[in-house]
Image (cartoon, rainbow, N blue to C red; front, side, top):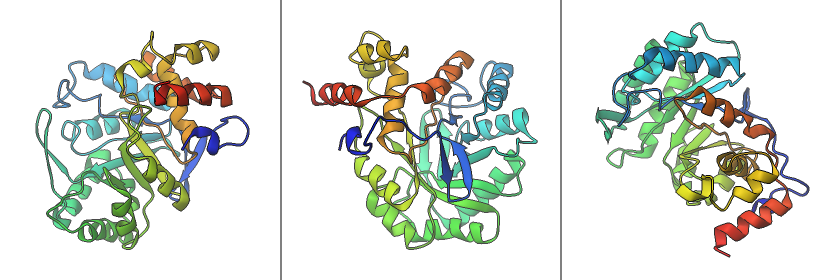
Length: 295
């Protein structure tokens, strides 16, 4: 499905989305994975002060949606967010995740046992210095535990007031349908980009249900989003970078898409935020469709 099929005029995407029906967030948020130690997202960053400065700049720019997880570091990302920003701005929405246990740099195992998910959520609350989590996402679906049991545990936390909204990550359309039989789902987070269209059906399904779709690795694909690549002409037309065009394509793809590009650079953060001003048109649509089809 092309972008043009979603929009009758230009690709003028909405600048905000109401998550879960009651939390309005800007459609360009911040992914807080890369503020941890590198490589492997392990431990604290070498320059902790710069990471805190970056997070404070996120708030200064008016970004009011931050994505993190208990496994980022592990625990490091959540701790830094609290250190930099608590007490939080009234409109800031922090989404975190449980269900993936970090074992070492680049190493993780899934754990969807209800007791683990509940305990992990309690620890997220403590690290983030919150009484309730605005969005808690099931990070990796554990094949050893029935999905309904894992999601059911998160919905119990919601009923207790410890969580406001529940989300899924790395899910299939069937996973989402099963989860919806247990309770409301506010978001789905999957890899998705110009180069990775494997979640096309899920983008459309979440839109039908009013659920946010949060693409991660939105710039995967190498040359597609790099200077000197096939998006250069479109980027020049809009006085943008190729990576901004790639992100703008995601915003135009569907109005329920929320971006969470991650970075450890303030300059890159500001560039990502400016993508809201890159409005693609039907000529751009035709060019991008031709690029994707290899013509």
